[in-house]
Length: 113
Image (tube, rainbow, N blue to C red; front, side, top):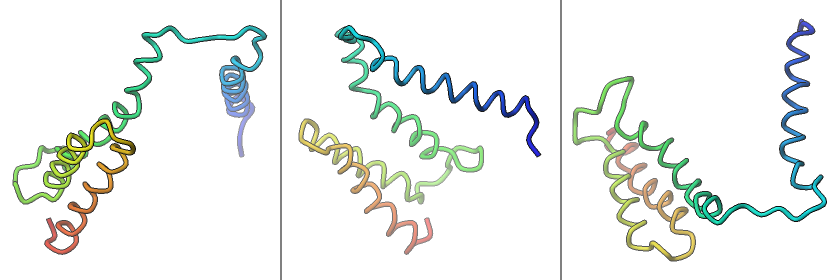
């Protein structure tokens, strides 16, 4: 059974979420981000992807990987190579993920790396 404090926190978080996300629609004036903020937001998807991938690439159960026989190394290397090859072209990030997984999965599943 949920107590009133928990329900209050849930409702409060919902209200804050709705207000902050609808702020741009409520305002009657046009609102624009500064140029530096727009430029910074262009890097947000790549930065978020790197923040998720980097620790998973080099750490296993709290320890740094100690062997070259790890499929993650080769998958990441193939993905990075593809990204720098296709940089500036459309869907470079999606291609990076696809190529990295295409190298990682056979090594991981077939060789057990």
